[in-house]
Length: 307
Image (cartoon, rainbow, N blue to C red; front, side, top):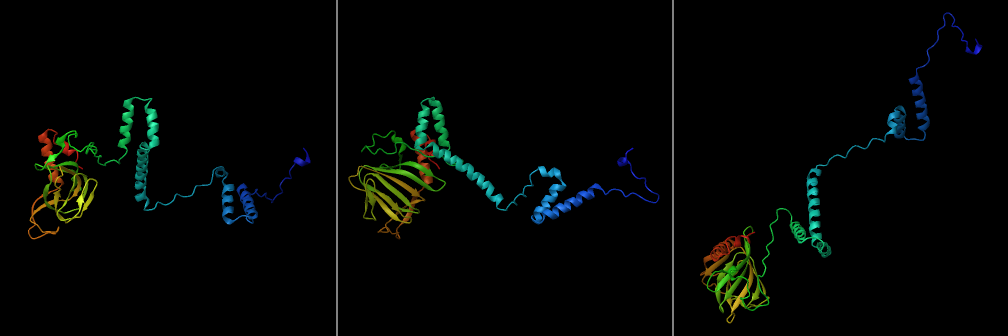
């Protein structure tokens, strides 16, 4: 046996020391490396390096992500509103895009290669997107007034005019029972005359379409194209000029129209002004329903104008 492979036999009384444990050597090496590297690294970087060396498995993974941001109390309020606004904006954008001239041209070119049924379905869908969910439908009344004719014989159906007296009638266009106003055409035929003295509780807008008229308490006269604003609280007497065969005016009446008797003079309420009747959107609706049912148009002809 070679001398290089022989080992000296232990003497009596002597004892071999066990080798130092392996974990202790690794810890010493780790501390030495940390001490050397620590001169050029910050304390936080050294701690991260120590964790990486001591656990090799985690070194292959990216560092942990930062903790999630704490939820603010306002998030629960803003989030549902933001989602609603986003969907609402997209819907409005589609509706607006459907009615732009460019989209109309593109839809017209595409419609030439499609059937009329699909084109009408697409147009109907676009119109449904024009208003948000829950909104009331539009009121579209065709042939309300013939601006090219001087007579009434060109009207499609004279039954749409609701008679209030022998010479006075009205045609309702909008009966807004939810807000207390109505829009109608007022027509007076058979020459000049006095329609009656009345008081307004709310504002009134008027646009003259045919004929001439005015108020006894004022010196102005309304002719075709004249717009008139009537303030609330005013009492006046409507007079149609002599020689006017037909007067038609569009009136937007809010609140009540109170018929009074007597004369306060100069448009001011006097001691003799006594309320003898009234008109509002509900009396107009009732008169329209009864007339349309009597003349054959049907009660629902007036109900379609309710908003």
